[in-house]
Image (cartoon, rainbow, N blue to C red; front, side):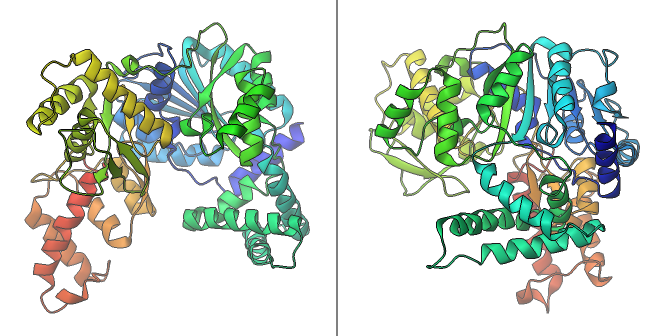
Amino acid sequence: MNDIVTTLARSYDDTPYPGRAYAHTHPDYMAVLATLLGLKPPPIAHCRVLEVGCAVGANVMPMAVSLPEASFVGIDLSPRQIAKGQQTIDALGITNITLLARDLQDVGDELGQFDYIIAHGVYSWAPAPVRDRLMALIKRCLTPDGIAYISYNTYPGWHILGAIRDLMLYTVRDVEDPQDRARMALALLDMLAESDSEHAGAFNSFIAAYAGRFRAMLDRLGPLSHAFLLHDALEAVNEPLSFAQFAAHAAQHGLQYLCETEFPMVLPQGLKPETVDAIRSFSRSGIDLEQYMDFLRGRQFRQTLLCHDHLKIRRTLRPERLTGMAVAALMRPETQPVDLAGETPVVFRNLHDVAFTVTAPITKAALLYLAGASPRAVPFETLVAEARRRAAEGGAALRDAEPSALARRLGGDLLRAFATATTLVSFHLHPPLVATQPGERPKATALARLEAQTGIEVTNLYHDVLQLDPFDRLLLQVLDGQRDRAAIVREMTGAIAAGRVQYVNEAHVSAPRAGLEVEIEQRLRWFAQAALLVA
């Protein structure tokens, strides 16, 4: 057992895990889901958060910056990663976060109680005694109303990915250098992805499809792909399990399944009604129902929320639970003008091209209002009032409508959007203070500016990760809230002249400054829309 832990520690020291933020681990997001399911989670502003397996702390640092009155503790097996994270904390002067190099098996009660506990990328990659220790720690250290997040690999999807892992491990069996192992594994993935043909058998077609999906996911990670591949697929320990087995393990420790962070996946969407009826007849519990859906969908990864088993979860979504929340959405109608007077269906689409159809005038007006306010989250009560006013101005007969009835109709539609895709609408109990316009002296957080200096990914104020090109990365670095437009243009002009960054707008090569001013203004507006600028 100790040999395995030592091997894992050495692996993460030799090749640090790629640090980044994970939106669904944010305590605000966890608290929203708990509230929607009838619980009363701890308030966000002053919460205590523990992350197990924090690596360099790249996930909890943005949380600590946006929640200065909250406190954060991160523990990790790798002293090298903890030391690197501490350097960043010291450089930025963040005072509400502590990182500790600690073996999970050695953690007792000394850390105290936590309102939210995060374990991303730990459970499936740890030996069974350590997984037991993780569950025991959550039970012992989670406050009575607290919420815990655990991610893990699942069957049935990992039956096929497990075969690909076996192939990769066999291919690199005599290779010790981590980067050589990653390169050879990637070459194998490419071969497998292209191996399908009309004469191939069903198993080969499955392997090819899964290899292609895995390769595409790695491509999206860019420079981080080698480290992710080494630790996700080629690590010494990788033990998937079924969702039902995971839920049973949690129950053994006095914890219960709350929900999946990918909320639409909890619902039987995309399945034929006859199929849903059939699996409901086979299911003896909600756990059974979700397990059957995992089988039908080929699920390979889960991000699950747990809570103490004494809490009563109310799984019927009710619009009144949106009271006290704020709402953010950026959907635009496919056609203009929008009929606000009647129940004519209108299709709205978000930036990911996900469609959402609405008929209620109050909801149409609300989505138009939210689009104008984006990326700011609007209090639900304010949204109801503004949407009612706009719908009435558009000709809707709302004079005799009860405000509570309008709130229920709008809330129901917003919950329907959230259950369709979490990218359509987001709810917040503690929304960040974001700028809707760049302002005279635009400002990004010191952490985002540092991220732009050291990598291609930056974390926005909603804890989402964005990839920036070299021009945007340099531009973001100068947004310290001290420079006005003229100073920003001078800084970027000097950087272009010195060859630090390339200005690729060919139409303005002969008059770069005029074109650069236009380009910078456009990029600043996009930064604001992407929630990268502080209000």
